[in-house]
Amino acid sequence: MGLPAYLAPFRPRLLAALNGYNRERFFKDAGAGVTVGIVALPLAMAFAIASGLKPEAGIWTAIIAGALISALGGSAVQIGGPAGAFIVIVYGIVERYGLANLLISTACAGVLLFVLGFLKLGTLVRYVPVSIVVGFTNGIAVLIVLSQVKDLLGLQIAKMPADFFSQLRVMANHMESFNPLALGIGLACLLGLFVWPRLFDTQTRIASGFSVRITRMMQAVEGVQLWRAARLASRMPGPIVALITLTAFAYVLSLPVDTIGTRFGGIPRTLPAFELPDFSWSTVQLLVAPTLTIALLGAIESLLCARVADQISGLPRHDPNQELMAQGVANFVVPFFGGMPATGTIARTVTNVRAGATSPVSGLVHSVTLVAVVLVAAPLAVHVPLAVLAGILLYVAWNMGEWREFAQIHKASNHHRLLMLGTFLLTVIFDLTVALQVGLVLACVLLARRMSSLFQVVETSRTADSASFQLYGSLFFGAVAKVDPILTAVENAPQGLAVRLDVQSLQLLDTSGMDVLEQLHKAIVLRGGRLLLAGLNAQPREVMEQAGFLEKVELL
Image (cartoon, rainbow, N blue to C red):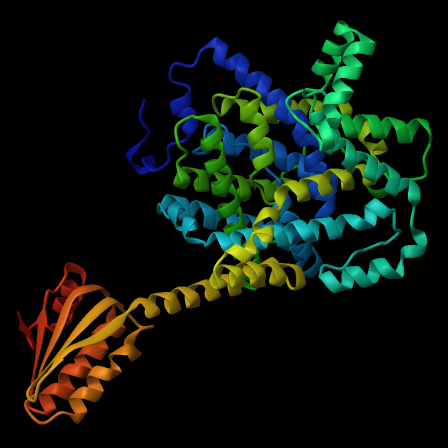
């Protein structure tokens, strides 16, 4: 059954995926959904706490936004929910504007995302230069690491500021409260997350073949059956293993470290209530910058994640416009349940694909799994040490950063270096809003400079009564100054000069370029001369026709 005409642009991938759906695919999706749901639990809590919110804000965002994005999205296997990229943004908004205004900004960003998708502007996100994306991604990763130092070291700080240097100063002033037990648990978590997936994998080698030697020793000592059990256990997600083992360790030994219970009092076992934030138009006007930042970052992250999912899953390509509409619906809805901004999450999406997901049904199962886990295990969450969550986020930040790009930056062009390092430093020192604004403006300026350098005016011949010039490239606002040599030649020439412009290699002409040609034509006519054009291409011809310029010149 087709959608109504007015909903024609709205085509969730779930509808297509259910065609020919069978029991075998359902079991694959169910298994993948349960796996990714378990992975999402510690990440959702960690992201919320690092953002200055209560852990349940991240959990319910993962549940509600995850279900909506899977049900309405344009990707077959993408998992939505709270993401590490939003930690810095959300914390800054809460610090400066308050929690209520965060909810309003998120809802407004949801409306903006839906409109972008509905107007089929999803492909515009691809125009953001990769140097800017790498710059702010690495900057966010550094800020995530910095935000977790407090809990990793067990520092007793009531409230952390939002900016980089203030955080450093506050932590330095509270170093007397350093807790070595918290540091030990956090580092054990971080080390375990790096080692766990490789420990039982004979195809993976850590330094000097360490994991292979451990593998052979365990096979020889413990026996085949125990080895197989260990291999089976190794398939459990690393964050869950770290969360369970280190929480049990801290609880049994009664270690004096901060936990979710001591900081937040626990996680409610009831479903979140629907509440309307205090909304006013004057408030929305004040929140334009954070709203645009949430929308732009959410669009970039979700579409990048969807592209990664396409590459590793081999399933039909995602629909970027449908994905943005789904992200918009999710971000509009979650604030009414006390949630935080949501987007596509690469780590959970990759887990979903590797677990065998074939359709958005796995995302729906992921949300149901989270609900079941929360309702059953919420009382146990009070014992989770915050240092464990800090270790998990440090691991997320390491995987999030594109550190190889920095290592190879010496091979890149000066433009690429300037954009990447500039965006990175602005993200770290100021905030992501400033970094994106300056980065995009700088990218446009550098693009204009690069295109203007490609435009050339070459004089091909000169006689007493004529002059010929060849135009190459794009004559636009950034290159109009390069027409000055022709104007100079006209001004210094005798009366009646015929100027011939060979524009066969002129590929693009904008209104500024058209204006300088008008000025050139007037200068030539004032001196009794003529302007001739040869080899006019389609795009420049269209601009000239609209301006009525072709009626004033001679075409050859």
